[in-house]
Length: 391
Image 1 (tube, rainbow, N blue to C red):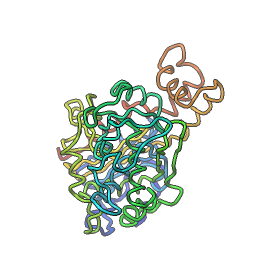
Image 2 (cartoon, rainbow, N blue to C red; image 1 turned 180 degrees about the vertical axis):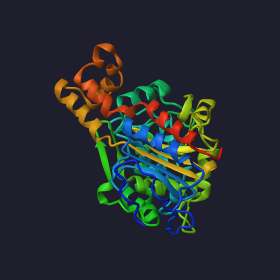
Image 3 (cartoon, rainbow, N blue to C red; image 1 turned 90 degrees about the vertical axis):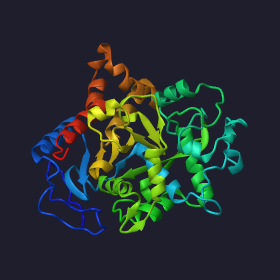
Image 4 (cartoon, rainbow, N blue to C red; image 1 turned 90 degrees about the horizontal axis):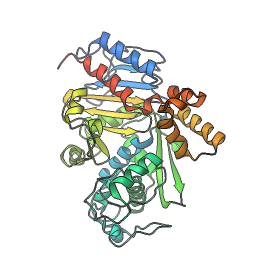
């Protein structure tokens, strides 16, 4: 059943998009949530700039906001999508990905800056756990992320498996390895292995693209554009431990690794842990927001999110159309001759300073890029969590 277009705040009749795998409807919203409080939470989301928002419990879409069928760039949510593809193809032999294979064994190197012998001892498992220790420049990596990576890894080779760092080089090299070992493109693998079994409605050949920057690295970023309703199905697949319509799409053991083999990041709050390219809120600050234990989520620039909350049998999808944010960054680049990273830094850092905050660009940026600030999303989540009746 097609999920209807929602252009205003609307408590829709519950639509089962998973459950037993059949499409059913219900005339009553689930009693687990307080409808009035949800109205307030979704109103806040609308005011703060949310583009799409979906709340799904026990397979029923409890409430939604925005055009659920419109694809938007998901940015770093792509990494959770890539993790799913790797999980489908792990093993040994032709067409399989051996997590214990080293980069040297797979013939993976880089240009213009080649890997050292020590770096080539990193395994596929190290890449997907973000502990390769390799500090190389990467396509699609913003200046702020690079500064944080430099801080964690330094500029000397690190023994693989010893230091965690959010590292686009790992994820881009993992993309190269996936396509090399399986003989499939990311789009082909996602279409055949996930989109078709889940009956995703809005994925096409334009949904996946590559960002090459060979001045930095030979390994490309594989980006995605996806709709909220398709992201919701992906989240429900993980909520159901990889099963859809009675068929095991992703091994349950792969999904269980997220909660059982994560790495503490040293940060507080929602990003206090990271496992297999998903984030885990595992500290007291996370629980104060309202997350129950066992929750995990995919995250991308501009507050693109898929929250999977097994304790509540719930998935929450949140999107912001970042094209307007990118537009303002391009405007600044043109006016001042900035690189994209410099323009982003100006939006994120300089616009917070009194001498810049009243400028036309910063005022537009505050409106266009409000969800770059995690605090706004936390406010919405807190209100949604407060609307839960069954504590």
